Amino acid sequence: MARTVLTVLGIILALWLVFAFIIPALFATLKFLLVLAIIAFLVVAAVTLVGKMSR
Image (cartoon, rainbow, N blue to C red; front, side):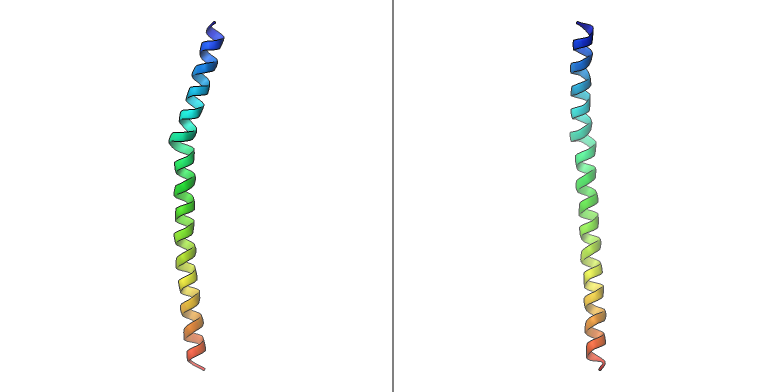
């Protein structure tokens, strides 16, 4: 009986950990990388435009 209760509590704890910490951390990381990629794209586009206009 105790083993079953501890198994259920372990599953509940694992699900809480996944939904409370891991999934939001993944979304925050992806959002940060997306913003970083957009900034890098804008910098590359600006440098390319300035380089083509100076010729």
